[in-house]
Image (cartoon, rainbow over all chains, first blue to last red; front, side, top):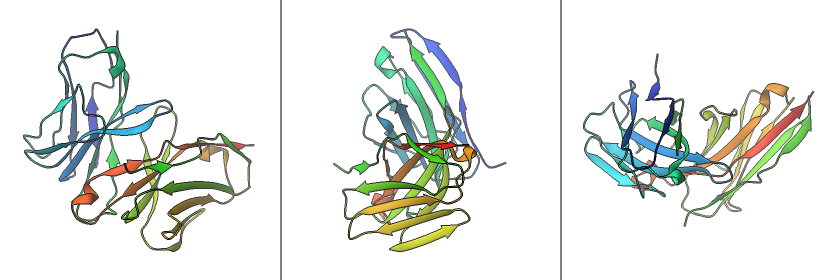
Length: 115
Length: 114
């Protein structure tokens, strides 16, 4: 089954404790992206990657890091989480970005709470 | 700053009626447009995309695009309670390098009343 998976699905942590949210897709997609979703603010892009070893900042990259060492995986790293990073996070992937109307598939989401 | 605007709602319609959802965008270079449906606590799922001016129909859903007015809409005919969700409009500036990013509106919450 074609899918985007994220782990963990739920996480409660404390300020300053480094964490990683994993994202994996089995569709051989070139393009992957991370979003956060907050009430009243909608979906905002954190980082995206056009291919292996190629990443770029989205609209809200502060406090986050990413890496793309393999095509299928795109982990999101919070080196020192803060309460304002409490949010619902979605990973997404698409086939070649050159086709602007390719469907973007979303993972199930990770609900993160930073105390 | 590329912006995509939607009325937040809630938009309430009776079962069987037509629901009309609207979206405007600021970047005239935008090439393709997407409507996603998102149930509470779930991930967005694609309903339709459109990239040519005019109407595009898929079952009970019709997307309408007017690039001159920078306006895209989604009509849901014969609305069902299961259509109750938040509808996200997304805009892509592609093809080419700009196509790697989707800009989302904040979504319109639709409630279909039985």
